[in-house]
Amino acid sequence: MGQAKASEVPADAGAAAEVQNGNGAEFQPYRVVSIEKTDMGEQAKGAWYEYVVDNGKSAIKGQKPGTKREVREHAERFVSELNARRGGRGGSVWSPRRGK
Image (tube, rainbow, N blue to C red):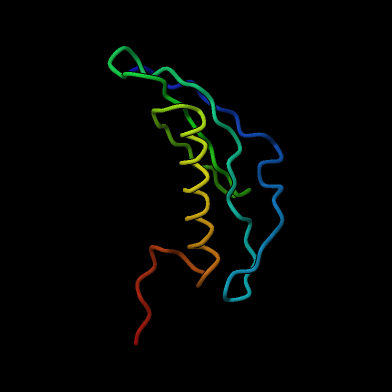
């Protein structure tokens, strides 16, 4: 596979308003900050795009084949799911369950 073209995250990527989760803690919601066409090499078929989502503390890059519209819809669903996980109960989704 070919090397993907790097995307730059804009300086204001974390400029989204803070939101409170179910525990009253504030967090910056994730949002889609860029979608760029990328070259995945000769073995990849069709158009590929690299998308970046950011919340001001961390950026997540993903790659997906399809049209730019399809990739934007995917990235927006991904952001919605990330924000729903963070906004409900708070804490890490990887934390062990609390005692019953």
